[in-house]
Length: 91
Image 1 (cartoon, rainbow, N blue to C red):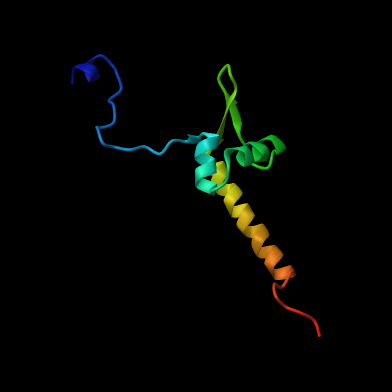
Image 2 (cartoon, helix red, strand yellow):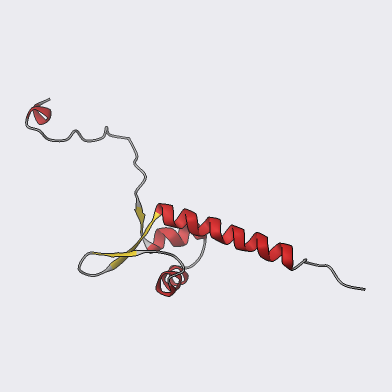
């Protein structure tokens, strides 16, 4: 209560987990099950939106942007599968 009287914000209760808004490239690599170098290449090519944070310019990917990227990959894969029948042979 002393913190509330001084105008300080109340901290989340111990044990409450918050989803981070931004992920590191290593975290994105784990999520996509690829190497961090592959994620870095996606970011550098502009395929996966990311931001540089801080003086050293470390890359961060917004969780929502990652989800949108995955949905786009699913759409492209579905489109490819529909136009390139796998295993079908003419004749």
